[in-house]
Image (cartoon, rainbow, N blue to C red; front, side, top):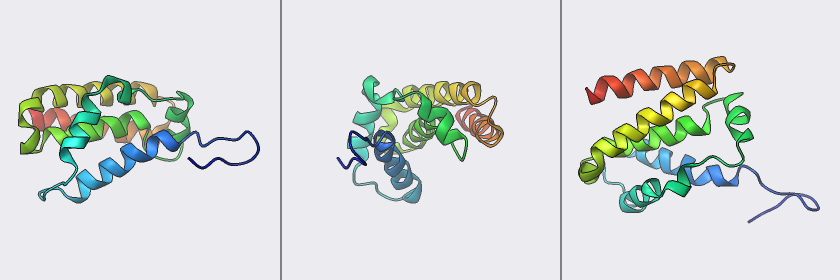
Length: 128
């Protein structure tokens, strides 16, 4: 809830939860993830899967991965876990949709675009 300056805000605050979620999923690949049910519930809640404000897409993409690609990676990591088996197809579909959007959103951002294209290929290869 920290804000900076008079009338200031923390516009990237909404992304810290998904970033930490992705780090937890990736860092515990092949191990138990204590908050897996919470993560699955969060991803399946449509309102959580919208990047606000939209400017964050290009701002983050300018120096790394876009927020849309992060959401796609979360879905992909969840789809690969046996605990989420009931939702596997839905999660794979979501991951492809988000990565396709990340590719489209980052056409003018070389690294972010290259990353999203590579991840999209990886997701499609592993799902087929």
